[in-house]
Each structure stands twice: as structure tokens, then as C-alpha cells.
Image (tube, rainbow over all chains, first blue to last red; front, side):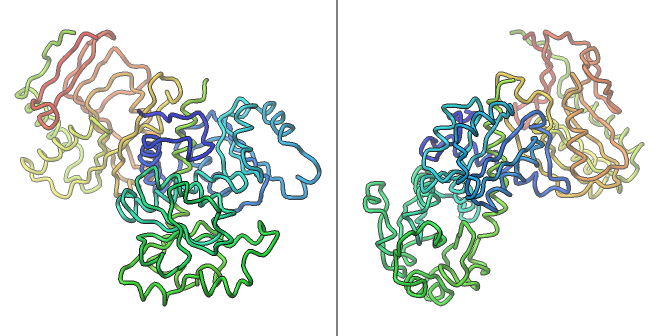
Length: 309
Length: 179
């Protein structure tokens, strides 16, 4: 029971409720550790972790690196910006590099869906998916649920609406899996062009009216408008998007309850969320960042336990 | 599995009184002293001892923290069973304090070694002492000895020393079990 049922963290869909409980309980301990004067434990002294980021990332990469260092692991970083990918490095070449570096755990972000699964089949290391294309971003979903649990006591029975660009969002998909696994109700809200056609098959509701969605929910997880993934226009203008789906203080004040506001970052201030909302007491955006380190420490620690000596 | 009683409730009470007096002798009014119980089992002994000091010996404002040493152990990935952590509750700094680490049984000394590393995350103490109820003196793997001990036991490696408390097992007692 004190061990994960999986060998790698490739997506939330491979986890069960016991895994999530175990990750959260372990994260509770690490949250206490990272609030000590000396925020480091020596558990992973003989573990080497490679962070392979084929897509740009700031906070996820920092969060993982900090989590690894707080656990005393040796860390190597490999960042391939878009230009390096264009030079023609294939994933299999990278795999061979990893093999020769004898790393125990690989944290990977990649633009292609299923990159983590591919890697897990070809390399003798634990794989943690830090985002694969528009597919999954499991640690983000775990830290989101952990933050809801911390704020509201439990995730079970809570109503969560995910607002914004669902179509291009790996955060949305992983969140849907994680929230449903823990017994929350999920709706998505956004322009119809940014909501996948068959999303209701996952058991989530669709709401295109922001006000109705906010009236229904306990928690609103607001996603970033991902301009970089949009080759065509999915809505007429940013201004129109903001008018219809942007969350401002006035909308929140008109609700008869105080809902919790979340955002995975980075925020487009004034587009999907206004500054006063992002910095308000209802927002737990910075708690999410702090919890991200604790949750990632838990995931790394639990997977490292399975590394053979 | 057979168990032999080593200490009964009366014996333990006498020992606790003696340990309390020894602590007072060395720490006076405890104004610069903090107590750290090692989770999970050292916590019970620490709570008992502090309760006694406050109730019978008029000690005031004693500071007790509970320390979990799981992430500092030297057998991570070396055991068949995964290690499970418990909670650490230390809401004070130990910078320049006299620290008394409390555990129920001192066996190999590895837990205390881990505790000595872990405690440094909360500051640099002035000095650290070790208090145990049972000292298994022939079983040490490391050069670690207690400053205060309830009873010294010459148990062999095949035997297990089990400390029970009223809070958890409905009785204060110490048994030696054949594994």
C-alpha cells in the first residue's frame, strides 16, 4: 500500500485512488520539510535525475529542479529550444544519450503526444511526464488537486470548472482525470471552438456561459490562452475572448458565494484573468506553486524507492 | 513467539521519576532546553516524561517537538518494504538550545544517527543529549551511547524488545520477545 502501482508517472489515467492518496500523504511530509530553516533531506543522495525539456518551460522546470535538489539528487538539465529540435535531434538519439549517462529518473517535457510512453519502453529509467503535447501534464493536475484539498479539506464532491482553452490543454485533460478519480464533478467552459468535440464522453459537462459556470462551481481553474498552439484563429479577438470568458472581480462579487480561483500559470494578466482577481484572497495561484514543489518531491521520492540498487 | 516481561508499570514509573530527576539535575529550569521525541515511539515516552516533570516537579513551559527521521535513514532502497514517513511537528528553532533526543529503545544507533542529521535542519543546537528507556548495549552498529537510560538490556539479536504504553496497548510494560 505504501508503494505506487505504476513504474513511471506517464499520465493520471494510469493511476488509481490509492496512488493519489499516497502521493498526497507523502507531499504533506515534504511540505513540512520545505518550510524548515534548512529545506533539504538526504534521501536521494545516490539518485541521478535528467530533466529533458524539448519544449519551453519556466516554472515546471524550476519546480522539478528544486524538488530534486531538496531531495539531494544529482541533477542534469537538457533544454532543447525550438531551434535545437529543428536541427534534427530525434528522441531515440536522446534515449541513447540517456542510456550512456546512467540516469535513474528522467523528467521529460515534449511537444509530441505519447513521448513519455515511448521513452519508458526504450530506456531503463523511471520516466516522469512533465507535459507531452496536448495530452497530459500529470504533476500539474496532482498539485492542483492537492491545492484544492488543502483549501477545501477534500476534493470529493467538489464542483470544479475548467475555463478557457480546453482543446490545446494538457492541464485540462490531466485535471479531468485526477478530479474524477477523486470524486469531484467537472465542467469545462470556453468558446465552442476551443472545446474538444467529444469531451462529454469523458463524463464532463460543457458550459459556454461563464456566469452560469461560475455560479455552479466551488473552484474555477482558469487556463492560459495558448497563442503559440493556435495556427488558426479560434476566436475573433483577444478582446472579445476577455469580454466573454475573462474573469474579473465584478463577476466574482456578483456571485452569492466565494469560489476558489486557480491558474496553472503563466498568467496573461488582463486576458483570461484580471490582476485584482489573480492577486485576491480567493486566488490560490501562489499556493499552487509552493505545493508544486512538495508534490513533485513526493512523486520523485516514491518512484526513486523503486529504483533497483 | 514467546514474550518475557522485563519491566512492569511500577518499574517504569520509578524509572521515569529517576530520569526526570536526572534531567532536572543537568538542565535546571529547562529555560534553554528543548525535547525532541523520535516518531513514532519516542513521542509516547517524551510525552510521559514531560507530563511528569510538569505535574510532579513543577517544571514550566517545556518545549516538545516530534521528529520523523524517515527521509534521513541510511536504508532507503535497501529494504524490501518501502519506508513510510510520519509527521514532524517542531514549531520552534533549536538554534543554541540544549536538545534532549528521546526514544524508547536504543538498538543499532542508526535511528539516532539519522536524528542527529535531521535535527540540524532546525538550527545549530548548543549540544545534544540522548535519553532512552531501554539500552540494548551489545547491539550497536555505530559509536552512539545514551546520556540517560532507563534500563540496560543484554538482549541478543534474535530477540526483540517491545515497549507498550497505556495510550496504545492499555498497559505500561516492556517485553523481550523471541523473533
